[in-house]
Length: 472
Image 1 (cartoon, rainbow, N blue to C red):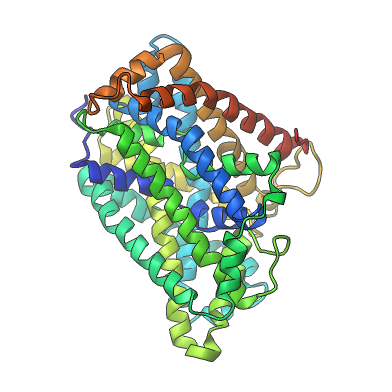
Image 2: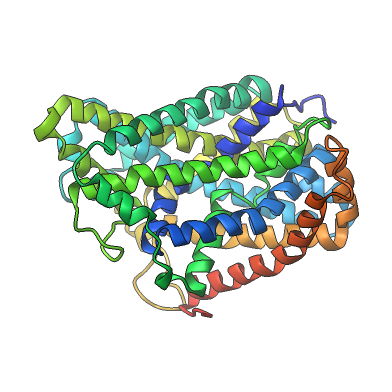
C-alpha cells in the first residue's frame, strides 16, 4: 500500500463518509417526487425490496474489492485481473466520477447561491416567476458560486482520509440529520401538511407496473452512487477487521432513511402552498427545488413575517448544501485516489489538479441554461424532440447510463472473473461466521440475479433516453 494512502480511524468514520457519499441531491428531490408520482407507499415498498435485494449486494462487492486491493477502481481491477481489459471498467468509473461532478458542482452552486441570496434578504425576488431562469442564466454569478463550492470540496479532500473526509463527515452528517428533522417538525405544523402526508404515504397499488418497478430500481441504484467506484475507493481505506456486511447494510439503510425522511419534508411543504396537488401536477426536478420551494417559504410571510420566513428558507437551502457537499467530496475522491495511486502524486497536488479539471469541464454545464446558445441547445437525440442542453446531455451519458453499465460490469466481473469464492473470503475477514451462514447464501443468490436486472435497467434507459423506445 502506498505511503500516501490513509485509513478510516474507525468503522463509524467509514459509515458516515460512505453514507454521505450516497446522500445527495437525488435523495432530496428525486426520491420524494418518484414516490409521489408512482403510488406513494406502494412505490416505497418496491424501492426498499429492490434496494436490499439488488443494490445491497453491489454495495458489498464494491467495498470488498476496494478493501481487498487497497487501490482505486482502476488499480483494483487491474490487480484482480492483471493483463485483461477489465481495468477499463475502473476507468469508466473514474471518468464517470469526473463528469458527474462537473455538472453536479453547477447544481450545488445554484443551491449555495440560493442560500446566500435568501440569507441576505432575497427570498421575495427568488420566489418571483421567471427568477430561476434569470439566476441560472447569469454566467458570472454562477461562476463564483460554483467556484466557491469547488474550492470547499477540494479543501476537504486535500485534508486526507482522517483529517479531511472523515472529520467533515462526522460534522456534516449529524448536522444534516438535525436540520432535516427540525424542518420536518416545523413543516408538519403548517396548514394542509396532513394532506401531503396522506398523498405521500397512502399506497396506490393500481399504479404499480413494470415501468414503476424500473423507476424504483433506477432510483435506488442512482441514490447509492453505485457503478462509478466511489465505494471501491472508500472501501480501500477500510480496516481488515471491520465487518463490511454490517457496515454496508447501515450505509444502505441510512441512505434509504434520509431519502424517505426528505419526502416527509418536501411533499407536505408542497401541499402547504398547493393543497390540490396531484401526482400529475406535482413539480419535479430543479423546478421543485428552485422555483416551488422559495414560493412555499414566501407563503409563510403573512403568518410569521419576512425575516423568519427568510431564515427558514436559508436554513432549508443550507441543509441541501450539506447534502450536496457530502456527495461532491466522494465524487472528487474517486479521481483523486486514481491520480495519487497511479500517478504516484501527492494528495494535495492530485486533488487540486483534478478539481481544476472538473471546474473546466463544468463550464459547459454552467453555460447550458441560457448563458450560451451553443451549450443551451447542444444536441438532438435520435428520438427527436427539442435540443438537449449540455448539462442534461452529460447527466444522461455519465449518470443515467454509465452508472447502471458500471454496476452490471462490476457484478459480472465479481461472478465470473474474481469469483464469489474470493469475495466470500474477503468478507469473512472481520466476519468469521460468514462462510456457510444464511447471510452468505442470500448475498450469493442475490449476486447471481443482480447483473441481469441491472442490465435490463441499462438497456431500458438507453432505449428510452435516446431513442424514445420503452420495453414495457
